[in-house]
Length: 387
Ligand code: XIL
Image 1 (cartoon, rainbow, N blue to C red):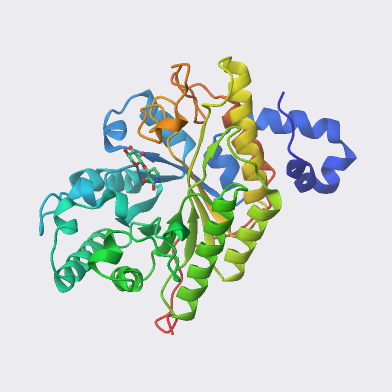
Image 2: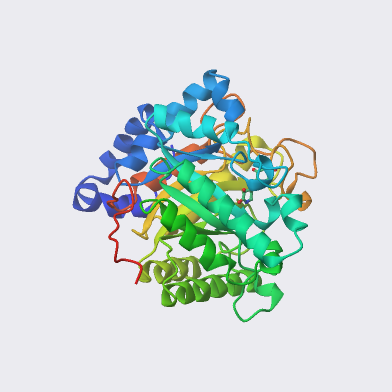
């Protein structure tokens, strides 16, 4: 039996306090048949996952699990610029199309990830030698993607990880390839072009490294909020803040208050908040699997209990659904986040054999205990809204 979260009890309100003993088995019985998709949807939260085209095309038991458990899909790699383009004026949309078509065919909301990310930028773009050409190439990328999928993407990560306070710039921008090739105006150019290409898609700024209580993450949170405020002031079209939420067991201290304040300040700017890449490394947890799975579940629960208390959080995406398909298990993440004992990491809600883990129950309980919220299916816009 899993602990009923504090908020689940609060959300149950009077009914729960009248008969707390009854509330526990009720929740558990519901969870036995329901999917994360349904439990989250009942609170107005869209739950989804990253996936790869190959996983959808397989049409196997994993594909079935995905269709059952998620209301939203995001391509793990297939929309990244580096994956799509090997030369100027050349783009291969086939894999990205496959994911978007699958989402539409199954009535799933689709996130676009991502238009610009310094980590996944084609070599040819990095080598362009003048600003005007680079600016044109960047805008062609943004407009090409957003207009191709116009009407089918709920939200776009327009720029992924643009902030790095470590680079010591007053505007907090990461000194990356876009800054070098286009200049600091790349950010507003990209968001403006995306808005023009699909006025109803939500435009997101997606960031990592803001979840815990360390001096670096304090700085990062401050820098992201400053940047968002500045974008607001300059009427740069932006609708949402993305929080990647790559969690780790036992690596960093956590401050409920600091996370809460961060979310509140973003929400106060009128921004939606999306948890975009939720997963959890377990390299510091013991080898014993039940103990490890419990620690991973606790980490999810602690984070989500705070995050979902903020009604501006409308979407939660796992970065993969089953340990069978995780960048952590494939060791594509930081080397320091791999298990030293060589056993396989267990970061996601389902295990390799597609069985629910304690992490699944942690997500289910967090969703069940979250305050209800509403959300329009696509961004509501007026032609005058960008000032
Ligand atoms: C990762 C993918 O999961 C890997 O398969 C790939 O090798 C590298 O990128 N932040 C992001 C995601 O915004 O796009 C990254 O995805 C994980 C970190």
